[in-house]
Length: 198
Image (tube, rainbow, N blue to C red):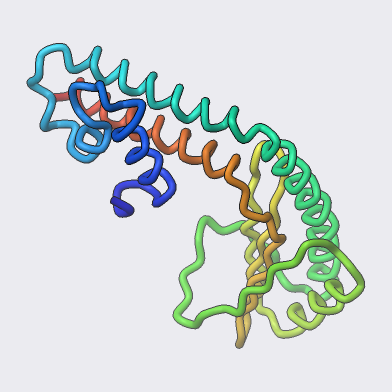
């Protein structure tokens, strides 16, 4: 189902359907895969609301069970935010001096792959690398993301050879659960709108 939702969300939906959601009249997977199939079923709105609430409770219980990972995630995110601020300032200053534009595009499509480099902090060596990339760049695309009010940097140095520099945010299951909860809520919102229109 990765074409409809992420792999992690797929795993949670499977766990819910075979565990906590086993008593539901319809499975979350079946409903979210094709909500219009259930449009004519009596009381579908109430069934869907209950399923949605139960699935959110299931995810919240999983989040509570790994509470220590939340602290680790927040510490990693703070470290990324600090590194992003430092690197962003270096890039902006040096790009201005070299007259290389820094833009915030919605997306960039390239035929040539870029070399991706992940870093964990700012250092003189990182600054020297940025100088090298700037020297061969026509522009810099800033793809920095905001996560929970913190910045996680990502910059594409576009030139004859492309380089993607990312501030590394380690994998954390707490973040995966939060992201999947948001994804599932969006899926239910879309499905509910479809049911109301039918």
